[in-house]
Every structure is written in C-alpha cells, then in structure tokens.
Length: 377
Ligand code: MG
Image 1 (cartoon, rainbow, N blue to C red):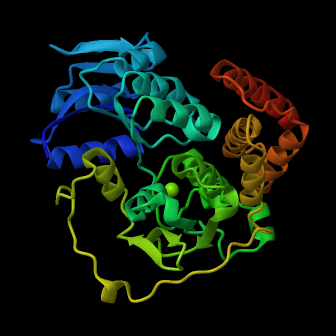
Image 2 (cartoon, rainbow, N blue to C red):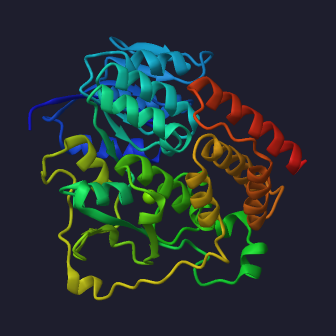
C-alpha cells in the first residue's frame, strides 16, 4: 500500500486515540496532515509532539497551544479548513455529535475519501451525504464495527437480500424492565464488551445505538428498512452478516476490538498485519449465542425503524431528542427508561419536512433540543 495522507477529526476521543494506535504501528504507511482534538489540549499536544502533523485544531479559541512548525486552527472553521485541504487522501471523522456533518460534506466536495465513525452525519443527513458522495465519487468507509462487517461481507450489493446487524444487548440484556427503570448512571455505563464514550454507552444500554445503526446501514448500503434485521449476540464476535438472495449467509468475525474496523477503513482495500496482536481462535471462543431482541424492553429500536421509514426530518428529531434525554439521564434528571418516553413524545409532536436542506436540518435539530429540554423541565 502506498503512503496515505490522513487527518483525524476527534483525535483525542475513543476512536481517535485507537486510530493513532493503529497508525503508530503503520508509520511508514501514513503521514498525518491534521489532528483535531476538541478541548483536550493536553492530550492533543502530546499527540502532536509524537505524530508531528502540519495542523492541529482546538475547539476553544481561548486555549493556546504553541508547537514549533505546527499551525493551530480553531473550532468548526478549523475543521472545515482541514476538510478543504486537498493534501488529504483520507479523513477519519471521529468527532461525536452534529459537529461532524458540515466538515464531512466539505471533504466530500473536495473529493477526499471519508472513514466515517460519526453516526450523526448519516442519521441527520444520510440522503444528502450519500448523494454528494456518489456525485463526487467519494467512498464513505464505515468505521463502526457492524457497518465495517457488512462492508467486508458484500461483494455485489444487488444480490444481497438482507443485512443482519448484531447487537451485544448491553448491560441490561438479561435484566427486567423494572431493573432498567431504577438503573443508575453507573450501571448504564458498565458495558460488558466495549469501552466507548458516555453518550454511545448509554445508547447501547437502551439499544438506541442499534436503532441509529439501522438508519446508518440504510444509507450506507442503500437497503430498505424491511431488509435490515437485528439479532442479539452477547459475545460480540460476529460483527454483522448479510444474506444473499440464494439463502447463503456471509458473516464477519473477529475479536471485539475497534482496532480492526478502524484499520480496515483507513487502509482499505488492503489487508495488512498492522495492529493485529492475537490470532482468532474458534476453539477458545467455543460458543456463539444468538437471540431475538426484546422490543418491549428495548422500544428504542422500533422507534428508530419508525423514524427511518418516515424519513426526512424524522431521524433528525429522533437523534436530537434522544441525545438531549441521554444528557439529562447522565445528569441524574431522568431515569434510563424516560429516555425512550421523552424521545417518543418528541417524535409524536414533530412536524415532518420531507427533504430538509442542511440549514433546515440544523434548524430542526436546534428546535427539537430546546423543546426536549422544556419537556424534561
Ligand atoms: Mg457499533
């Protein structure tokens, strides 16, 4: 594989730091153009000293960092400047939240390949992003383990009959609804398989994360919602699967490590040892379990299907209301189960816009957040 020039948006987050661990093992294969690290300037400075990018980007302009030979950029403007820099072959979008959307569109317009770890980009504006990517002949390479798995399984999308997304089930898989209703923040954050940011960990506890992934899969693979299934698989070894028209099922397996899908996205289509530390052993794993998801206990998945099928601004509302409710849960203002109740109420109140523009999407996002906070009180 020839050397690639890469930028990482969100280098100090969970995916960003793991991406740098991958790149550290593949130093002859990557040159880092820019690292954008939000407000964790301490870690960003450490990363910049080690990886020597041309630019760093800090969220807050009041924080000053002086590093020899490295230009400092600030805020969303800085992110967009990075995404307009054609020195980049690929940009890993690993910021969390809606802040990822506009820079991603900028990179697509500049024909820079995207390794996408930011869910909101497709949940909020999947139609626009995928259309733009197609027009500009830009690949959106999924970093999320489930979508990476599907991407790795698909040879010919036209012959695929169904996508089967696996879900670990989170910490409440075998608990009752009553247990979930009294769940503390600490319990909700104790994910049995994956270490991730707080927001996504709570989404994994309610299974809303799976709901958002269904919407992402719909856009990435242009698959109707009725052809996207979810199956619970607690071991997180099968990362997802596809069923072909003839009934043959292809699944992607691997140890539960984000290093593998991150590396695949940024080295695609190459298969190189890189970060691999351990060989996969079926006999060590011994068993793989699967079960139907309980939609009574995890109604968020149904809500996400409904939002996806409704289309337009419905998924913008779903995403914004859910995120506000998750934040309120993390602040101990509401219970874990209220997250669904509140999101559901906001969805019912929502006035649908069929094909919202990017400006309208941000406007709706803002309005829904204000109204959700009002509802929470
Ligand atoms: Mg995932």
